[in-house]
Length: 288
Length: 223
Image (cartoon, rainbow over all chains, first blue to last red; front, side):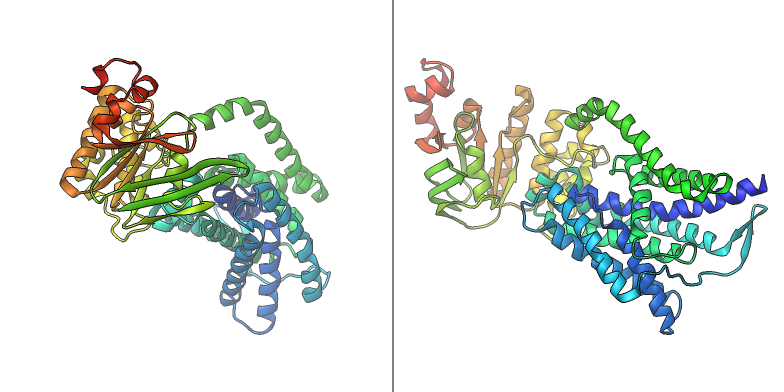
């Protein structure tokens, strides 16, 4: 039982990191209707950058903070390229993000090489409800909680947050009231980048990252995001936690190499389920 | 207030507006009537800056704000959010000034806009436009899908806004009877051209308007 709880706890922690990536997908998709396939790269970039900054003697927290900000800025830059001219279709933008994601491998390898890298997070163990947990896991969970609370405040209580929601709710009306939907798309991409970056700096001490780790991160984040149809951050959080725990249990009792398989299976299952009620969904959207 | 000169707007090869000229004085109420697809909404979107004209020009003295066809609310957001977002371009985001015009919206402020009745939604749409402090309010199909009593109530509100605040109004309508009653002057747009224009009372008496827009060749509609 203790073993099970330990697996579950580590699953919740990685699930939290997936949730951050997933929320990045959701934030970008809601505002721009673009699936950002470069979403995993921001996590890798931030993790590697934090590694370098720490190596240069920059203290913790500051190093992670800078890495997250840089990830956010690169998110906005990816958005700027992907959204392109005003009438670029979401599909074209999606393909551009895919290209940028793969292209980024070259830059990552040139700067950090092709070997996985990692840095130390919080040391030691904490006893939570009788279960020994690595302190870093607890930190990931707490930071995710903070990030979600901050996002909730941003989207619900600030004017620019309501503006972002408005772009998602009715882009035409948003343009009519004078909201620059294109600029809001860049804000969303920046936010997505920062969320991915936060996941990256939290995960890197737990799982070393290499230039191509973005695939696994993005697959898990995307799988979690489609729980909520790419539109609902709350559902994405639940999806991410389910996914994290399921993968930890698969790895714990089965084989670690089957982890991603679990994510893909769950994603496939949801897609089949959603497709089977697609007609209902479109009817709902037409009414909305 | 608004002076449109020889405006031409094209969608690809199709000409939506063909040399349209139109004029609205400060504080005036003007109707724009015409059949579906005549280019009424295109004209509106062009003077609101959403479409670029192929040639011709328009001069706008003040701020024009559009109440779009089909209302185009932020359906999953509250009435208050909808109103506050209407003030995106201006500094004052307090919806109290709209509650003064539509007290009913004050009662509905916490409701999700998409769950309201059609008339209430149209009220929110007009209220959202008022939040941007328009000098000229352009209403696209005020009456669409609404019961006659609800339309009359909304029309009264628009009339009051015009009389009390001197707000100019451009009413784009398929319901020609309503438009000609409410606005003293009107333009008839057909196939991208201004077919007729003049005082509403005279237009309502003209046989062409009666047959095409008022549903008959009798004199009843003019009264």
